[in-house]
Image (cartoon, rainbow, N blue to C red):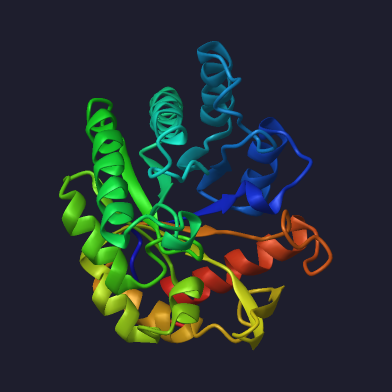
Length: 284
């Protein structure tokens, strides 16, 4: 049994509730920590929040015995010459907030797909993304914050193969992977246990979610509770146990995006937590 694994809920699962309500709810559900959507319509807006408010949030979490596992930012485009400086500045502000919240990680996208910039060579899209993340990582290191780049649709890093290449090119000790296996499986380069083995030495953070995949082209899927979809979670969890992973498993409950597909978090997130604990701590 790996008692070094902790579990966090993602505020993607709690649209319409403020951060103080989420702290209370996630404590009641039984999570160890909280992952926060950092956006204009998230529980924290990094472009508006003051240091004083961040400190109040930190105090509320500490009082409840809760920790912050990760701040999920949405700044992504390191290529556009107009957007790039602001993307980097905004990510630096997220790092400052993470420091105030005693949060060890921020999520960063692996840039944008080359198709977002027609006429720009792939090598230029890649190198600009590498240099942008490297600058952000250097700033994060000053605060002891780590960067986890997510395997995600719409980025340069949907597969583990591409993610590992990006991490190695960035080449900073505080940059690793947010292993979101559902997207890795959809990418189709690595599957199941193989994906975990290829990713293992780079994983800083893990997202879980399940869906029923109906078709890849066009992409058609429906969000569902863990263990009721088509994602190979039992195999992935079994391999994660073998790696000795230490860190958070974060339930990226997608109710924000698909409110009709999923029950309220009191029901659905509790189910997912129980499923993950059973498979990761008790071995299925």
